[in-house]
Length: 375
Ligand SMILES: Cc1ncc(COP(=O)(O)O)c(C=O)c1O
Image 1 (cartoon, rainbow, N blue to C red):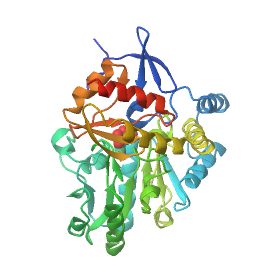
Image 2 (cartoon, rainbow, N blue to C red):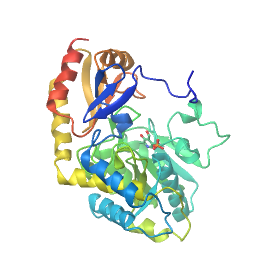
Image 3 (cartoon, protein in one colour):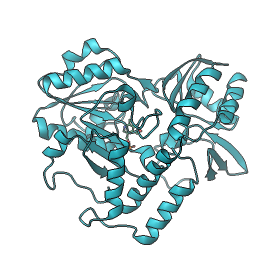
């Protein structure tokens, strides 16, 4: 009997240690990880630079709050802004994707004084009160709060023509995952995202890109905003940002930074030195090698080679890849795990989700292809 609250369905797999893209499970079993702990393990397991950075920071100073200046925090923020390409001028560090979204929405309400948010069908933004309010289906499944903290309306995915009726003079923010994760590795596409940008400018609403899952190189670009050539007012990011050390960030454009008042946002652990050392090491790894190029190439290789067995098509971008199946994805997932390959499902019952570490090679994809062909 486990001492853990029983809220997570358990994979039939107990991991003891891991290296590269391989999980080593109890009993000597070796499993290829194409799921990366829900899109977290971007550098894979046992990455030497990341491991060294955390060990060194733990030895140097494991924690001081945001009230105490630390060089590692400044370096991580500056590095993240540079990685994001110059549109943003400040970073607010927090602990989780939901918390980043919660704060982004708070900023939009503060700046606009308006009561409403437009979100997209199929979205997932987290499990806190505000993030849950803009998560598709949360109310029916788990939101549990007696009411949502603001008005929300839902835009159909990839339908630029439907935007105007949902994004109005009452709208404080539009929140969107440029590539939906839980929604089934569903890419919104440039036309829809550009139309959102135009409409936000027309009515004075803020555009928030939730890049918790699709950011930090997962699409093969630093952020999906770069992939689609659309500049949001805020980006939220987490998951791959720390490669497993819990952390998240809110990237603000100058319009938003200017509106921040002293003590209007806060956190104890956000921006802690261990988290910042992890973030710095992740960006160093992404920038010093060709990991993003690898994501683009190997993603393409999956599309070219894995159209076999139950696979009927592909969606998503980079290593947020959806494989559409001719039967329930959960059955395929179970069959692949029985063949020592870990994958994920999604909110779309026909879509199997791949979120592998960025170091995945073509030789690993060949293993997937062989397993799929046998199903
Ligand atoms: C797109 C997106 N936003 C937000 C979240 C919530 O992040 P966290 O679980 O770190 O709060 C998730 C988590 O899966 C996510 O995929």
